[in-house]
Image (cartoon, rainbow, N blue to C red; front, top):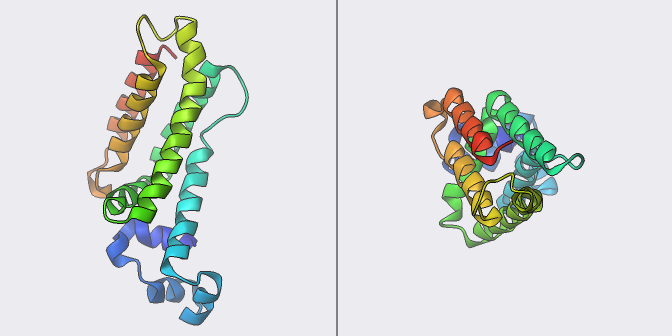
Length: 176
């Protein structure tokens, strides 16, 4: 799965071939297919790994503001230390436009992320921390859109400083 993840980040879906993955880990294709019977199963494992990396930024403890701060700190860390994660998310987003099964998976994960953000933003809005007339669902959508924009750039076009600026401005706008 890790070899497929790295290959997807480097070469996109066009370069994701099971023979190449098998060769990269030193097994024959039959062995790879024993663990991942289809390319879709392998891609699902890659998605699971990517979502797990992203989920590592979601804190379970602390106040809403502390959890949001931890999320942004975790995102900063991932942008800097795991640029391949952003590339994988970008590839998945592009491919989902042509792949209904992948689109359904990404919709589910987006909904879960939006729900998690709402759970944190609603108390902040109720206390006035988000400012007057700020709808938590709208703010969650803005956070998600900003972060999606960060991973839609090709690897060679990404600028970690721009990611830092975007995250810093989001935090300032959220008052965290």
